[in-house]
Length: 271
Image 1 (cartoon, rainbow, N blue to C red):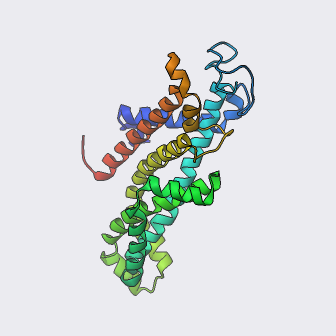
Image 2: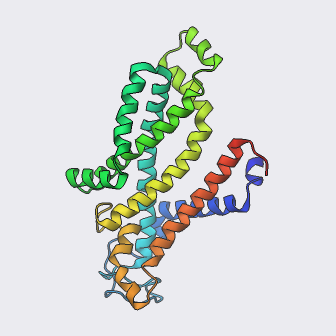
Image 3: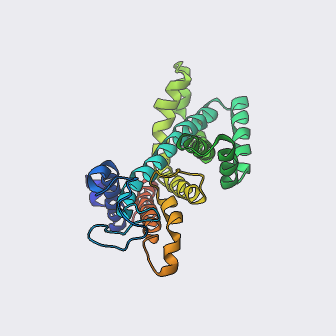
């Protein structure tokens, strides 16, 4: 509690935005006045009491789709990030603990993945396996395993040379104990801060794929596809298509505010 009291205003703002979006995602069916895919009016109806943010190109309520988009876009980004971190951090720590041939093989595989630009790799894989939610999560997790692996490996390498790691090995502790009980707790703060940053990358990546038509597929509400579907309104001076983009920017900035504060705390620096 004392730690939260010392948080700067930017961190409080970020946590408030994140908490608000989390509540919106959880209670989306209760907040949205209409269904996610329900056609409730004519195309591109203006803002009114019936339609708070007007309707989209098919006559669906924009406010309702914006609310449901919070659940879909943020939820899938969180899931993909969690999978990438679970796999990447474990493999990185294992490579650092075992070293030798295992480390070299894993590192070369990661180098191959990172050698291909992420967007090109994602477009190529999604074209092969098909654009679905499951395949998108798999592809994004595969791409972001690489940077997580490198961070976890680099952080773990500074820990595995410590005396208490050698003592644990002399006691006969196995690989699982060394990874979970000895190394992971000592690099957890670094991984947690990186999780926030990586979530932003994944979140923006999903929005970009949806904008290109290879992410979350219609009629599922998604902020990236909503921007694409209603972009024509910008030509008529209607800012409605910019609202999903504003939501993307707001969440990204908020997460970065919180991550910056966490990095500052973990570094031990004083204000």
